[in-house]
Length: 200
Image 1 (cartoon, rainbow, N blue to C red):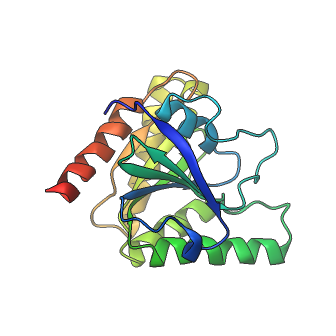
Image 2: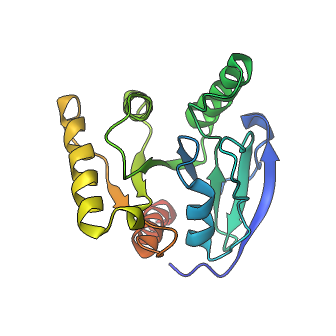
């Protein structure tokens, strides 16, 4: 897929305020500081599209970006940021689950995981919840450049293997690096394939 045009559309505090059209939506979510904004900017070839921040947990709204006037990339708030108050965290969780469970235009959730770390409880719980809720999703392992190609591949494989204790069919996964632009074509091709099945 060639991304010729990407632009910010709207930031919504709740699902009812999201765009009213029926274009397919692909949501990106992960723990704070997983490199979500950098990945979005790399995928879209647009350096300042999603605001990157040195402070984790900055995304507090549902951010829509229209891509090639055909589909939306949706930047969701990160989960599990310890420095947020319990009230803010609960509100965000409600907003995230409301969007994921209610948004009819949502066709796939990309869950971002830092490939440097072993499986974390918070990521596993989120992935299991998506499965239990019958939400189509794929996993994107980020920051592959920080550990090298071989280590990134073995870490990702080990992470996926651990899902087999509860999962019969494993979700698709991708290994990426925003710095080195690794995995860009694979993720975009995956989106394009889904779009083609929708448009048939």
